[in-house]
Each structure stands twice: as C-alpha cells, then as structure tokens.
Amino acid sequence: MVSSMKNFFLTILVYFFLLVSNRVYSDSTETQAYYAGLFDEVCKIVEENFYDPAKIEDEFPPIKKKYTKDLIDIDNSIEFSVIINKMLEQLKTSHTYYLTPADYEYYHLSAIFSAIPVISTLFKDEEIIYPSIGVITEKIAGKVFIVSVLSGSVAQEAGLLRGDEVISVNGKPFTAIKSIESSLGKSVEFKIKRSHQEGFQLFSVVPIAINPKKEMLEAEKSRIKIIEQDGKKIGYIHIYSYAGIEYHQELLAAITWGELKDADALIIDLRYGLGGANTSYLNLFNSNIPILETIDRTGKKQRFDSQWRKPAVYLVNKTTRSGKELLAFGAKKYKFATVVGETTAGAATAGRLFPLSNGDLIYLAVMGVKIDGVKLEGIGVAPDIFVPEDVRYSMGKDIQLEKSVSYLVERLQKN
Image 1 (cartoon, rainbow, N blue to C red):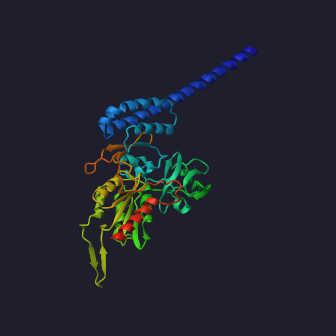
Image 2 (spheres, rainbow, N blue to C red):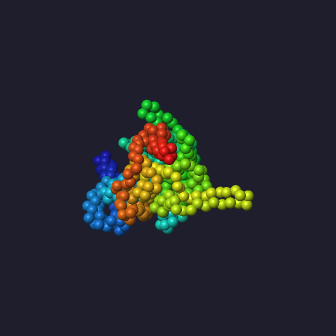
Image 3 (cartoon, rainbow, N blue to C red):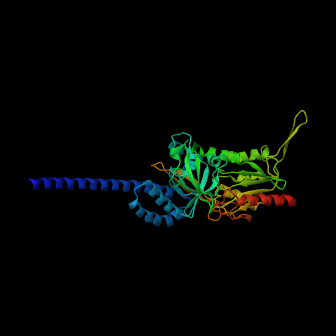
C-alpha cells in the first residue's frame, strides 16, 4: 500500500514537472516567435525605405544576420529595443533609431508627424501629450546630467539647474518617462548632485502632461530676454525646436514689434531640442527687404522692420542637428551671423516615422541632404568662434552664452 502511494505521488510529480516544463518551453517559443516577427518587420521597413539602397544591399545583410542571432535570448521589449538600436547604429546614419513609449522622442516626433494618418491613429486621433518636467538630459560617462532646463518649466520653478547630476527620482534610477509618468500632478523627489564638492540635494518637482510642440513653443517665448552689458542691449532667444513655422514666426514677432525690437545685437540659441528648420529662414538677415513706417492722423510714427540688420550670433554645440545645422552653415558661409560654440552634430539627413504593429516606432533616414553641394552628415558645421564646454556640475553657468554676449558687446563697441 505504501509503495503504491509513493508511485502515485511520483507519477503526479513527474506529470506536474512535464506540464510546467512544456508551459515554459511554449512561452519561450512564443516569445521568440513574437520578437522574430517584429525583427522582420523592422528589417523590411529599413530595406524598403532607407535612403541609400546601395548601403542596404552591400552592408545590411551581414548586420541583419549578426543581430538575428541575438534574438534568441530576448524576453522583453526593453532588451529588444536595445538590440534593434545596436543594429541600426551599424548603418552609421542620423535620424535612424527605434523608439518606444519610454522614450521622450517618441512623443516629440509623433507630435511633429501627427498629420500623417498612421501616426494620428496611433494616438487614437487625440492630442499627443506626454509626462514632462521640462528638462533635457544626457548620459555622460555613465551618469545622467541635466543639460538644459526649459524656461518656464516646472523644473525651473523647482530650482533644478543646468549641470545638475540626477542621482535618483523617488529613490530609483532616472529615466525620462518612466520616472514621472505615474506621478502627474503629484510631487516627486529628485536627488541631485550640484557640484563635485557638495553633497546631495533634494528637490520636489510636480510633473505635468503637455503637448511637446506646445511645450517647446512656450519655452521659446518664455526665454526671450534682453541681456544688458557695458551699456549694450543684447537680445536673446532660445529656439528649442525648429520643427514648425510657428517657432520662426515667434522669432520674427519678437524682432519686429516684440521685446527684441530695440536690441543692439541678437543671439539665436540653436542648442538642444529638435531641428527641422528651413533654409528660407535665413531671409531674416536679408537687408534688401524695405522697412515699413506707418503714420496716424496725429502724426505718430511707427516703424516695422521684419529683418535683422545688426550683429547676430547663432549659438551651437554638438546637439545642434538637422535643419538647425543648415542655418548655421548658411549663416557662416554668407556671413549673416557669427557661429559660436562647438561643431554641430553632423546629423543632416531627412527622417520619417514608421509605426510598428506593437505601437513602437522606427525613425529612419529616408533622404540624404546636401546644402550648396556640401554634405554635412557625419561632419557638421565648425563654428567661427570655438567655445568648448563641459556642462557637468556647471551650476547653471553657461560659458558659451557668456562668450557670445561678450563677443557682440566687443563688436558693437568697435563699431
């Protein structure tokens, strides 16, 4: 009897083990099949739409083969995203990467391309919004630093500064979206290291949901100011994104009848954010456009000049990319404005968004770009005045902006 019971329980145990093993094997097989299908979907988009078909024909097959092998060990979307981005990096081309809802660019680019039906459908034809505190971060030497704080943002209100190292958010490692998406309207605790010498500081920030295009435009408006130095008035505007005519229109309004109208010189900051600028925006510096003057019945005169005819600086660095680089190139070549800062990103192709069946996105270079016959991709635009900068622990200080101001003041004094 005892022997029979032992055999019975042994049989049940073996059956259970086989059941679990088969379930694990089945789940693993289904996961591999899922990611293999998604991988093929990505590769098909690349093969059919990448701007350089010769590169796809000659270089992509071995790249594809190499990363196909890496799919075997993938069991989650984060690992898949990492693998795909490593594969796309092998094409050594800008505007080419894989995006998930955990990436802030997923929302920024979707907002730009929202007029495309497949993109608007992805967001159920509703306004595209995302969680934000209004900072741009960069990973440097394995640490996360705030490289820009959007003017008027909740991060600025909370006291976060350019150059701050983000240690953690609510005690966990910082990620642009995941750290704040579940805390909209609630205070989150940012643990910050502000300098090499000081210890940690804690800042309470309340994330908001906002349309990324609106966020960039509001930050641009809020950043317009006059910097007074040595009796000179230097106008300043930071165009975080140039992906839309509204950003340039705000600049034109500021110099025509706004706060920058009476500035002695002008700094247009093209660092950080998105590109998208059109080369026709350089018409801002066309001095052959006439000046308009109105006179009312009392004899009061008003002068409207839509052109900038005084000294100007385009402020750039390694994050200045795409259409913004075209403006820097044109300004430098035709001496419309002095380019100050660091060599630009060399990210000068034209990209397009492709949605995948799982809701993720591929941003892919679909056209090569030359300006006056010159290819900027992989090269960038070297500034007229080179000002290197290490943003880490800068405590809000901006030496590139300071140099731009001092250069313009000097130039005005000489004139």
